[in-house]
Image (tube, rainbow, N blue to C red; front, top):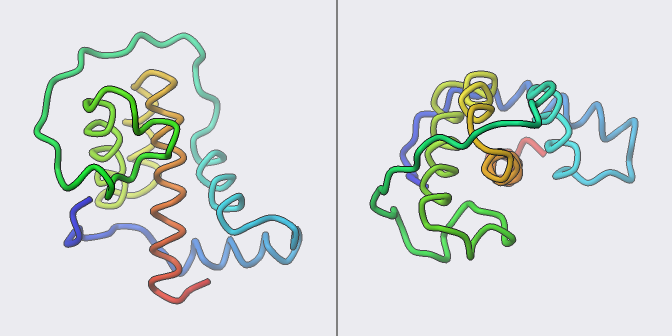
Amino acid sequence: MEPNIIHNINYHELAQEVKTRKEKSPEASHKEIISTIVAEKSGPIPVTQVPPPVTSQPASGKPDDSVLPAYARGENPNIKNIVEHLVTLTLQKGIEEGISYAKKEDPFILDAYHDSLSDVLLEELKKRKLI
């Protein structure tokens, strides 16, 4: 993940939403709450999707700095590239626009994107000391 990405996410608004939901469900973790927020913004996801052709891209960064969730790290390296691209696009253009692109991918990539984005947003909120 590129460290100098210009973020187009309203982290203060996201943090407020996380805090509000945490008050209502104190047993839920911050990650679960963020994951739920991202899922709600995703809306219904079509079950039958045909994956687009995958093009090979050079890997960025070291394998252990991947934003991929653990279950996806052993998959085709192109999956990492697609997920990282979607997460970067989301940070640059906003959650709704990133999700609109992610919905065009196959369900495995969409799931890995959702989990990765939740992790990245959680880390960014912590880094900014908003939660």
